[in-house]
Length: 188
Image (cartoon, rainbow, N blue to C red):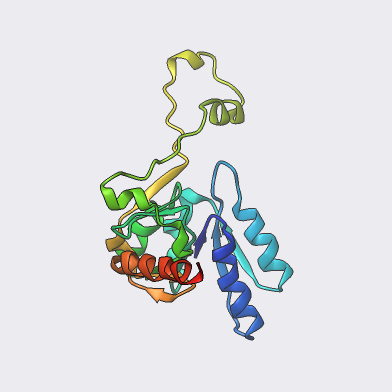
């Protein structure tokens, strides 16, 4: 089961497909921007069967998945991952249903200011993206809209980060960052 869309996420499937692996994918809708439709386009163009489900319906179909995979917008030094809203929901369900959750990402997505104790900023989007999409309400000024675009998934829910350094434990992101930095130190 996948949620959202990223190049890192899709490269996992591209590699598996090119290696001749046979698999099917359950893909969530990823509201409100529906970027999962890009994933569906890629997967189906490779001949891979996809089951498409609304974000809110992922609990009803997760039992059919062997494991879960998302991308990451940002990584904290703790190994927590900020990604498209719904990722934390997916992680909670995966833990409850004993499905491993992996995050496909690059080491460079570590937010280095988290080393100093800062938190990852979790973007919220304008309320009109939701209110306008629903056909309008009679009294929109009486509606408080929380349009969270990213959420934060704690490292304890993530089995591994699939990176250019291989699959690593979220707890080792700091060491992976140091290795990443040393590559640039040796270049100069």
